Image 1 (cartoon, one colour):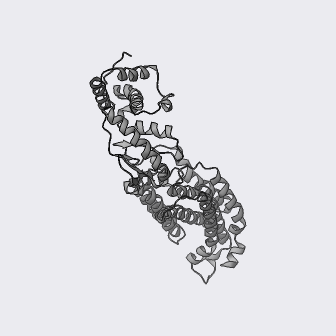
Image 2 (tube, helix red, strand yellow):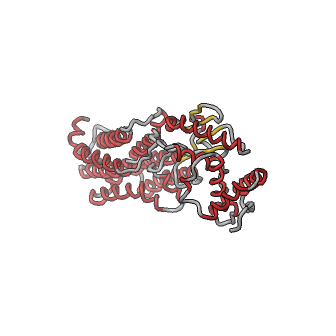
Image 3 (cartoon, rainbow, N blue to C red):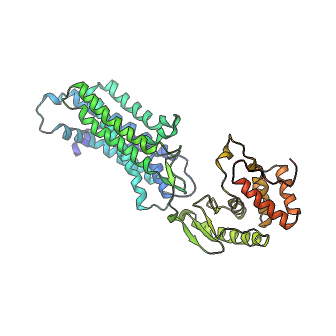
Length: 410
């Protein structure tokens, strides 16, 4: 095996491959949360560089054995053993490149769980599948055709579906560049579908290299891959543009009371300030006659929900706490159905900020003069009228077609 490494072009290409991979990863956008799963998934997205290189090398190795006409000799090793011996150096290259990407992504010190590492099974399977098919192409075609076909075909399979409809097509390829933010995990379908397709490619490659009639070889191999793709479609066709599912609420870290604050572990440093500001706002709103939930959560849009940004200042935390008291918007808020309740979103936010004793400056680029007039009018009327206005408009905000109660014209 050491001799094979010395003769393999994979060894010669290992330094530039690792360099290209690290350069590519250094230009990837990475969120500020230091979420371990997201960083591991970002490292896995190095497949856009690593897999086409490995596929091209596998096609070359296949052609090299083809040109040596080993099938006409009486080799001491089986076809599978020769393939493994020829392709093993490519595995070393892939391992080194993904290791470089992983080291770069984890260099900021995010907290990584053991379960996060299973994401790396996706690029590992994708490399195997592409290498197997590329090797088969090299055994069947001259290098001048097989190598470009393997490189370009591999790259297009990985990245081109991002621009196609339906959007879930991208989740069949194993390119995980958009996983994940702190509130999500990799969806089971987006994990299993590319692995299943890659394993089907591994199963199809030896059939293509067998001594069966050409039509039978192509038909069997195509059938195996087609079945895997159909199964993959069934696993991902319910997903949107992101390969993610909601993160389990059990991951939340909770502390305090009045209210209890629950945040993702990556945001735990912000939790004391969040708890302090939530307690202050809750006390002021209680005095104004507004009941607030007992728990502030990142996990769910229901109840008192917040979105936390690491390093956020008090004013930004206040604004997210105020908006978190408003109900989640219904589907009609994004059109085309009428949504009259949307008219009172910012007046409610402005009034809650005033009643909660916090600054409304973070809203200044979102509100208009009509919003300010409505919120000011709510502050001037009697307490019973104000509370009736608040409760009616919270209900209108949460429903399609409900008419809000306005205190001002326009």
